[in-house]
Length: 245
View (cartoon, rainbow, N blue to C red):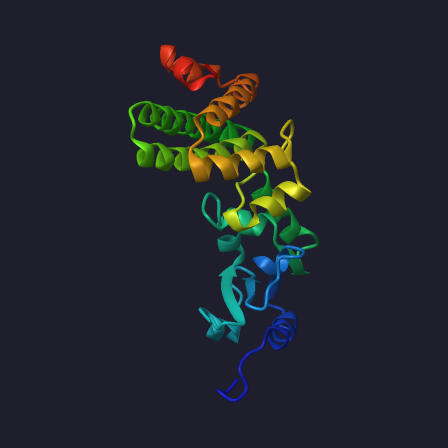
């Protein structure tokens, strides 16, 4: 393609689909999320090449324009992408354009979308402790008249809380941009989506202590039910400060 004829998404998909070395084409990002496309949305495309295959498509490796971003990887590299890592959620909700592995590409994406039981349990324990730590600091700072610190810690606690809630459901946490989209279409078990998002909004904006404590009571119940009581019990008497007064 020349400067007068830039590489387009449709042209590249047609080119890649005709190449037998390509075993998968996977579209991620806003164009893989219904109703999230804007005039600024580009096409983020994974091009999966069979291991040890030869193709001149590698000349497009690293191609990035306002309209088209390409990631060209081997099948082995694609299996490892986001496992773990920031890319996991994007691939968990990606759309498959081509799967020459008789469902193999779909299975790889399904594996990214579902945390293993041991992985999820370990992750949830860590996120629960981090959430409690930031919540505790926020409430103490509010008590001691440190308003800015209290709000900052409250915002930090919400980041850890969301990681925790999705880990409890064995799912990668969505990017902030897709949080409402994800919960509207795939609610978390036992959580009212609008009430949860409302609490997240108010706590990150104001550091509301009474709401933080109320939310913690719900989280504590869910965490204990999932087998994480030891993480909470390690906080000893400090738990009383986090609970509703």
